[in-house]
Length: 297
Image (cartoon, rainbow, N blue to C red; front, side):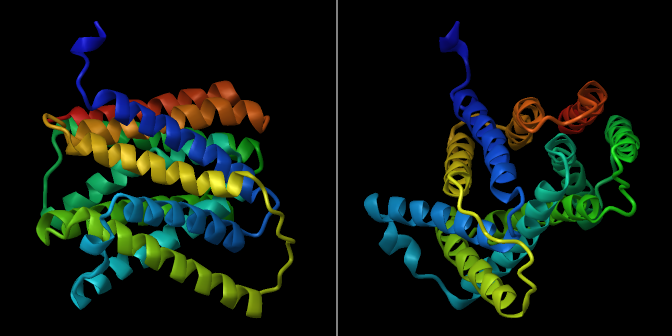
């Protein structure tokens, strides 16, 4: 039975599993902690692991040097991701994980809308229904949030998770432009992106340390390096699955987004979140909409 499974299925499921625990470690790392040192140190650990892997595999020479234009385009991607991650880390600290994880799962919707705007693609009736289902899930979360004292219109954490998700979707569209249209080698882009991201976040932390209020005291936790390492591993598995024959990006992206189920189920128990049954129904609506969006023709 297992021999009939497609080769890309095990790595993409492992990637989704890793992403789920990445979000859990991220929540643990930022709880009652300042955002920038946690974000910088987690990224530093993950990027160091990636760079060392490049050195060990003997690929450093092929990815180290690139043209000025390629570096500037990659640096712009790093700026975009740094902004997205800063928003998401803040939201993780301020909101229950059972709200953050499902909102993050709506990223395919925003990517689809971005493609609609950029490439003038008209949605099919099924795609239109899928978007309505996802927005219905959003509405359910706004109702639940009000019961927990969280207004999606006025709570800064709610604004941050939505902004971070939107920026992440823009990053996905930008990836398509860099890798597809410009044909920048993936290994080169990933290497320079990892290094640039550390420099950007390190600079942001130094500026905040110099001019910020420093209201929260930083506490080192094991989950900080675990966050960076899990993301690198999950991304490597995703790209490996993508490189295999007979893969479909829409299916892979959909399966990867199932990481929110791991985050929701384990996180709700670990962090003692409220209204789990109603949130599960809202999450089911969002996932159903994402499935319809991915499979609609």
